Structure formats: C-alpha cells, structure tokens
Image (cartoon, rainbow, N blue to C red; front, side):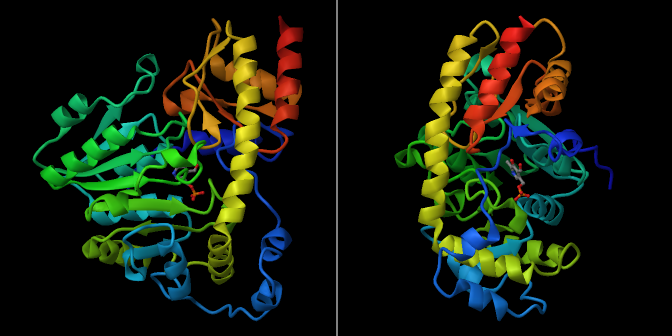
Length: 370
Ligand SMILES: Cc1ncc(COP(=O)(O)O)c(C=O)c1O
C-alpha cells in the first residue's frame, strides 16, 4: 500500500502542542474527564468498576445502542464502533473498494478522505467544489463522473474545511443518484449536530437510504477527540460485515474506557452539544466582524455549521509563509490551505472558548504589520 504524507496532520504535529492559541481547530472546546464524569451521578464509581478486558469487536452492545439514538432508523447491529473516524475512513475504503473499482471523492476535503481512497488501488475522481461558486455542489459534474464501475462516493457534510452544509435539495439529489446507480455513499458526518441553526440539520445519510454509511465521531461536534472513538452506521449488513472483518486487522476492538465514556457522553449529548453550540454562536459573529474589518485581506463564504471556515487570503505572497510568520510572532495557529490544495485559503476555527483572545492577538499583529 502506498500512501502520501498527511499534510494537515504534519502541519499540526509541528505546531499544535506548542502554539499558544489554536485559531484553526476543527474540534469544539473539550472538557476534562472529571467534567464529563460529573454529568451523571454515580459515573465516577461506575468507571472505577469498569472492566478492562477486550470488548466486543463490533463495539459494546450498550454503546452501539447509545449510538442509535442519534439516528432514526438504525439498530444496534447497524453500528460498527471504531477507534476514531480516521479508523472508519481507513477501514471503509480498504474493506469496500480496490483495484477495478472507481471512487468519487468530494473535495476539498480532510486529506484521508482522498488519500486513503487512492491507497486502495481503486481509480479515484474528485468532485471539486470552488470558492468562486460559493462552494456549491455541481450535480451535473457529479452525474457525468459516474462510471459503470463507480462503487463508492465520499461526501462530507458539514464540510471540512468550508464549514458549510449541503443544501437539503443537493443532499436529496446525491442520495437519489447513488440509489439509482447502485453506489455506496460514505457520508462523513463528524460535524453533524453542530449546525449553527439546528433546524437546518440534514437527515443522517444512513437514515436516508440503505446503501449509505454515516461516519460519526466523538471528536468534533462533541469536542472529545481524546476518546478516540468513532463509528460507521448503515442498514447495509454486508458493509458492516466487511468492515468488521477489516477491523480485526486494525484494532480488533475499541478501548473499554472510551466505550464507557462515549456512552455516557451520548446519554448527555444535549448538554454537551448545547455548550459547544453556544461557544460557536458567540464566536462566529466576532470572526465575521473581524473579516469585515479586514475585507482587503480576507473574504469568505460564511459557514453555517461546524466550528471551522475557509477564507481566501488576499495577499500577494505565499499563504503558508504568512501562517508560519503569524504563529512564530504571535503563537496563533492558522492552517494554510495548501494542505487542501487550496493555496490561497486558510482554515480558521471558532469553537474554542479563548477564540476572542486569539482573534484580538491576530488583529493587533496585523495592524502592527501594516
Ligand atoms: C471530515 C473529517 N473526518 C474525519 C476526521 C477524523 O476524526 P477523528 O478524530 O474521529 O479521527 C476529521 C478530523 O479532523 C475530519 O475533519
């Protein structure tokens, strides 16, 4: 298997734990283990008693049951628990496609959505969205891309890096097209449930049709990436079966403490999501106002979901060098768009509670730099 270096994670590895202010993070504000346990009476004592043996390979039954509460039509057996969405992407591609198959990937996207597909020996086409079109989805282009051997379509809504959701019409059309043409949809929904207006939430793909897989995670909307816990949900039994067989070669089963803590977090998901949404709703207008004050430098399609956005940076020079200068001089970390093959953009994050401070520091620096 050949796989390219993961540019997003390489950039983050260089700065994430040394930069003082994360102004590009894609995960919502996290919380301590103690804070999570305090959400339920008796949770700490139950954690002390939690058995540290292997867990069931498809995921502990109580956890799969808790995950079904996110969906309308899923049963516990429709869920495969994994040690993160990253494992979900790896397992799904390698279990489901290979040489002779064609895969379509919506781009720009989180790098593994594209590069893991390429590592399978399948032929890969990109369904490209463009800033100039407001990151719109070109359904005509998607239709033309489909081949007789197109087996899987990867989409990501709400999207990393744009922070925008598909429109309900586009989502329904994509699902119908996939249904008609017998294509599996792998829908990366790690930012789902963090729509800025919750009434705009799309149906989960796994509820929309039987050949669609929803990829979920505790990392983003829930802000608990340290749990390293994700899942695939689908009514297609053969997909679950194939992915389970692959999982025996990756992690066998997930972490017992993480399964326990994830089930707890999901029982309390309203509390967790509403705190995270509150931070996003408070921060986003500040970021919007910042971009308006600096409209000579930044322009964006305002996100409608997730804690991230992907503005265009109107500078003459190299945006990567600009980001490196900013982190060096201020400790504020932006993510250069070149890691998404979008070299004129940066990814910003507004899901952290210290975002106003980070934005203030960036603004002071930009004024001094003028
Ligand atoms: C769209 C998308 N999918 C998957 C992942 C991986 O998430 P996890 O932390 O669950 O591995 C990320 C992480 O940034 C992401 O943005």
